[in-house]
Image 1 (cartoon, helix red, strand yellow):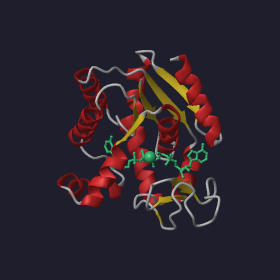
Image 2: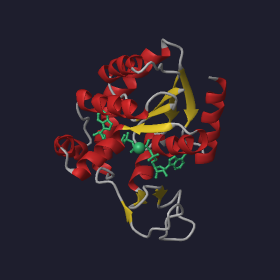
Image 3: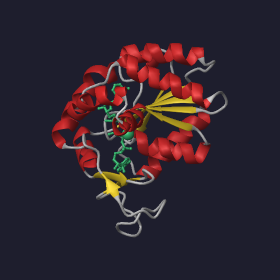
Image 4: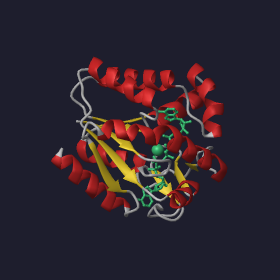
Length: 216
Ligand code: AP5
Ligand code: MG
């Protein structure tokens, strides 16, 4: 099964994708994570993307679609894909259709996480992750069981994203409203969109997504 998790910054795409990876053995394809890895490794793509991401704007369609195509090639057939933060423009949506066809795959479902924008700023500004394994946490909503120690790998170093400040988040929201939200009607016309309440507790959101997938 190949699905898109769609929603504005902080909607919970990454959180829910990680759970689907654990529960269903699917693969998370997050263009944001791929770009951050490229920035950290200072590859040509990373060098080009860094300033754009720091401003909260969108990286070029050609770059992100090439990253997705390469990941699908590396994955091979048989494993389901969760697209997290991709596609983000009408052009990327068209490119994804072509890429999936090239890999003999089809898009089964688009899950929109519905959220309240003011709450998202709170979510994003409080977010951090384990510097070693990447497990996600939040100052208020999702703290490690032992303070300062990662639940998953026991590391004690954590990090915050550079674009997780209020000003950049506002730009990221505007980009979502202007360029990403308009792709939903394209998928609605195909009858493959399901909406999930992204304001519910994390476990409840996961249960709602599982429910959608069980019926797909
Ligand atoms: P990207 O990394 O995709 O960021 P984003 O879309 O802004 O989304 P986030 O990762 O911030 O949020 P999320 O929905 O994953 O939420 P999370 O699960 O972490 O993109 C970053 C940048 O890269 C872009 O701005 C752009 O520059 C570039 N880029 C990436 N893809 C691109 C593309 N396709 N085209 C062009 N440019 C691209 O949750 C947030 C927090 O809330 C966490 O702390 C979590 O613990 C908490 N939380 C989650 N769910 C709940 C809940 N139900 N209740 C309470 N707390 C919750
Ligand atoms: Mg994310």
